[in-house]
Each structure stands twice: as structure tokens, then as C-alpha cells.
Length: 558
Image (tube, rainbow, N blue to C red; front, side, top):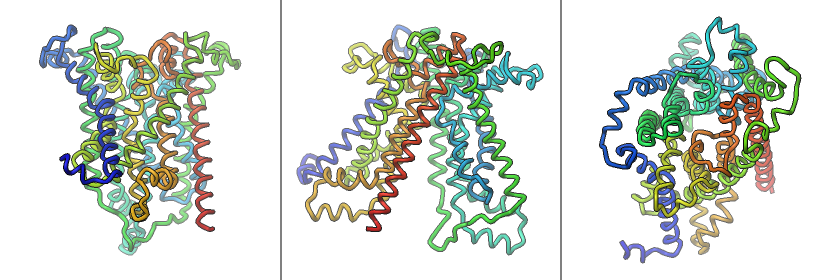
């Protein structure tokens, strides 16, 4: 092996060292913490090995097994409802000629900018015990599965929509012409052409929504009431009862359906075949008054409900004292009156998001580059890629809990970072690594291999080519990665709920604590501040991307 390394030039050695460093990074920030969590699930409170006793006790406890069943059926129902709404919405955006499609698409993506707790808080103001529309429930309650399902549909809708828009955008007009010539009805055409053509996107979106729903912590914590799910069980075991061993067991029980959903999604994607080829004719929607009108009304209704949920949170954050004094005030934004950290929690979240975007973008893009451009070293590259894909299947709560056991272990050389901003950044980068990695790999695959051939003939080093060519050409993808990491770090709660310290409390965690203390209006205010921040950064990202495209077009013209 050493002889083989000696035959490499300097660039080849550096590239392989880069792959090894990326593997080490993922090993320390993802694989080893999860391994420590697995070991902990086989130990008792004193650290003695008890084998499967903890798991046996888990399945012998009705309250805990009920949470497993609750999580499964609620997540399945959320996936069914979300897919139904998102499919029709995506169909309207891609297969109709209705007006306002750009506006409808922008409105549908609003929930991505909000923490998952926001829809739960809004529903409390709408349908809670003192809610504006409480009578609509006819004696029922929003606290429990009903509130969880509605909130998670809001939270998951844009994720499903983005996948389905891509799936429905790829269509060959020749198939529809053939169906028309054969006299197929619109319904038959939909069932035999449209639905089969988008089935892989539909299945993939279903797995994504199911995973998001079953692993979410914020929504069931705020509006779940006495309805227990796996995510809240972990929190109760670790924070409420200090039973870390059982918390580890629940964590792995929660990890199992997420991993199975992820594996099934990977299997489905491998079976997907190309829908378009060189002879394909792009499908251009034609105007159809009744169809376009019906789809416009549907999109208006869905977008309107999304705006109602967001608008309710904004209004609630400005009301003096709900529901008795409805005059508007900024008092709920004086967070020092409701939480010990006050505005410091928000600025901590800004710091976390900025550091996660900076460090994460550097690590992810550089790592993807060395893995994609290194020649040979196949088994190391494949192993590193597998570790990079693993984080998508790991729930935030599970990753956060694993960090407690790994970094807080006695004598750990990195134990000093526990409770600091550093561990929050490492956790956030690891948690959101997979999507960023896929984005970087996709961008790098689009680069012409001639760049490498020319640089090699001119004896330009890989590092210089990376700085002068790769990064500038892939700048839109780099910006996409940074904004993705920033927004997710700003809105996440499940991955960091176990890891913040006395000086690193975050805005999303502050929302949970203010809601627990009964300061729901202040919690809504903090959620609105997060949405405003994410929206502002997203707008700046859009402007930068647009400017880059204009500059690129002008350069090509010259």
C-alpha cells in the first residue's frame, strides 16, 4: 500500500489525504456518537452491561409501546394527507396554464422558513381552549393527534411539494398525444400516463414526509397534550427522569423506522428509469378554462390556509393579552420579560446559523470535491460517501442524545466542547450533511472533465484549479448549500435541545421554554422573528444568485 502511495504525484497524495480527513470528520461527528448511543442502550444507569434487558423492559411497558404505535399511525396519516395536497398543488404548478403560479409556489415554501413549533402555536390560538375558532371542533380538542397531524401537514407540505414538482416537470408530450389519439379520457390518461410517470417522486416524497413527521419533536411537545410519541418520550426519559439508558433505547427505536424509510427511498430511486431521452418532446401545458380555474381555486385555498397559520402567529405575537385585550403591542417581543436569556437566545441562533453555514459549506463542498475528483481509493471513497448519506436517516433527537454520551464521556479528549457553540455547530453540520453533500456532488458532476485535462497539461495544481475554476463555476450550488444550512440551523430544535449550555441557549429552545411557562404570545413572537430572519437571508440569497446568473450571461456574450 505504501508503495502505491509513493507512485502518486503530490496532488494525488493530497486528494487521498482529503478523503481520509473527510472520513475522519464523519466518523467523529456521526458514526462514533451513534455507536456510543447503541452501546449505552445495552447498559444500566451505572454503566454495567445488561444486554437486551432495557429493550425487553421497553416492550413490556405499555405506555412506551403505545408511543411507538402513536408515532407510526400519525406519521402515516400525515404522509397520506400531505401527499394528496402536495400532488394536486404540484400538478397545478406544472401541468396547468393557470395564472399566478410563481406566487403560489413562493407561498407554498413559506413553512420551510419557520420552526416546526410555529404551526402548533398558531393552532392553539385558532382552536385551543380559548381559540378564535374553538367552536368549530364541536367539543373536540386540538391538543393531541388532531393538532399534531394538522401542524405536521403544514410543516411537511413544502418538502413534499419540491419533490413532486420535479417529478411532474419531467414529461414526454408524445405519450399524451398517443393517449389522445387512442381516445383515452382525461381520467384514464392521468391513471395510465401521469401517475405512473410520477410514481417514483410520489414514493420518495412519501418517505421524506413520513421521516420528518415521525422524528419531529417541536410539534408534539407544544400541542401533543397527553398524546405521547417517540420524540417526546426521549425527552421525558432524558430530561424528565434522567434515565439515559432508556432514552438510548427509545432513540434507537425511533431511529429504526427512519432508517427503514431512508433505505426504501434509496431502493426506489435506484429502480427509477429515465423518463426523457433525446427524442422526447417537452410537455407544454395548454389552457383549459375549467381545469385551470379549479386548480387555481385549490391552490388559493391551500396557500390561504398556509397564510392563515403564519398570519395567526404574527397576530398572536402582537396581541396585548389573549383573548381579553386584543389591542396591539410590541411587549411580547421584549423577551427579557419572559425568558432568562431574552434576546441573547436569538443572537445565539444567529451565531449558530452563521457558523454552521460557513463551516458546513467549507467542509461539505471541499469534502464532496475530494471524493468526486480523487482517482482510485475506491473503498475509502465509497465508505466515506456511505457515512455522508447516513445523516439523512438519523433523527435530530437521536443525534443530539448520542452527542451527550460521546462528547460528555469521562476522559474524552474533546469533552471541553460540550455545552459550547462548537458542539452545536458540529451537531448542526452533521445533522444536515446529506442534502448539502448531494447538492455539491450534483454540481461537481456537471463540470466538464476537460477542465481537469487542461489543468493537468498546464501543470496547474488541484488546489489552484479548485480555487480558480471549481468554486466560481459552482458558486450557485455553494450559495444553495450555505442558505440551506443557515435556515435549518436557525429553525431546528430537536437536534440541539440536549446540547445547549448556559451561554448558548437558542431561539427555538427558548420558544419551547416560553410555551411551557405559559408565555405563548412571546413564544409566537420569537417564532415570527425566526421566520423574518430566514426570509431576509433567503431573499438576499435569491438576489445574489440572480446577479451571478446575469454576470455569467454577460460574460458568455463577451
